[in-house]
Length: 413
Ligand code: ADP
Image 1: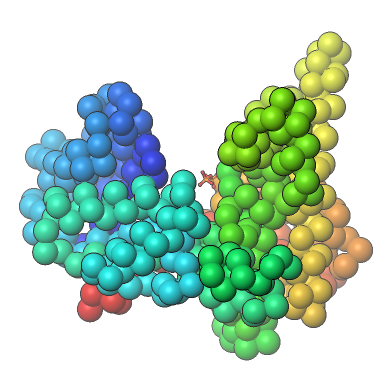
Image 2: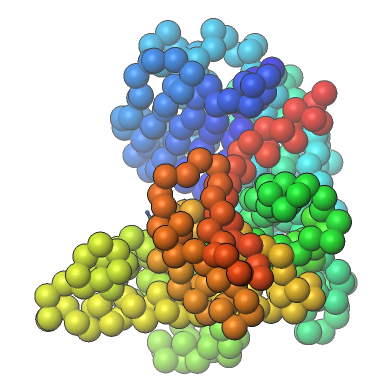
């Protein structure tokens, strides 16, 4: 059975076609710059056909889905003979709100509920809806399933998801901690439990999803009991361009400094111009920062770049410190920790970030095997725990699309 997984953003749409009889990817790709000039990268994985990587007009999400289907079935780039070989479509949906907390078959009621959550995720849910509608149009009659980023965090207790602000905003306006990256936290925590012996009962794991966006989850007995992102993905640890948690009064202060800047524009500074980009003034990409700081294979550059190197190093130090501080708070939340998991772009690839974070956790008995940590040659996971460490440290490659495909298949069955 083939399942198509769609992750629609406002100007991009990622897709993967899975053969669920073998859990393998048949093809994957990215429609980029939708609504602008349009670019498609399509990779047929299952056969030796060439990669398609070219500008292509993508005025709307509807058009993008049509182009994807055309490529999946094309004689030159395709992996299936016809549309009828796609048995179901799974969609990543960012926020399911208070009502949608597990994966569901999409019908009009579900669409209405996802629409109701646009107020909570104005940057993401509208794009997810466009992806769903485009598929309904292009592949009519094929069951579609929504898998929510917020779902895994549904088990967070009330005292951890309620903000200490007037209660009416929760009661009347649904303002609470939702948390994101749930599909990833679910996948890597399940893998960690397997590595710890397979019985979820009694396990205490902190999962660190460190990508462009970043969040941590406290996973006790296999269930999320707290997470760093909040009602929006801005809260928590610093990220590529997002500030993470800061004094909320900073919004007003920045607005005043910039001459009564409207709130949405001040928020834009926290969302798009902060994080490691904001501190370093160089880049949101950890590879650039590690080179500028002299920790990523370079030597920090010539002396005139000393200030640049200092700022890059400072950004990385702020990041490592804040991530470790949140790990510490989750150790308190769970009353201990058995394993810390690193995943996503930074977590899976930056040995420096892992080292920097774990250095801050030595005081609670987290000891990393520095040599193992440097290894780049690992499959799905690696164990980088040093002998004598009280806590296991795992690097686990996340696979959100596979989780979406599996949930979709389960529901459609
Ligand atoms: P997204 O949140 O967009 O899904 P990813 O999880 O793919 O992002 O993470 C992307 C980020 O991972 C990049 O911006 C970069 O900072 C970081 N990254 C990727 N590869 C490396 C690497 N080899 N070394 C350090 N950082 C890396």
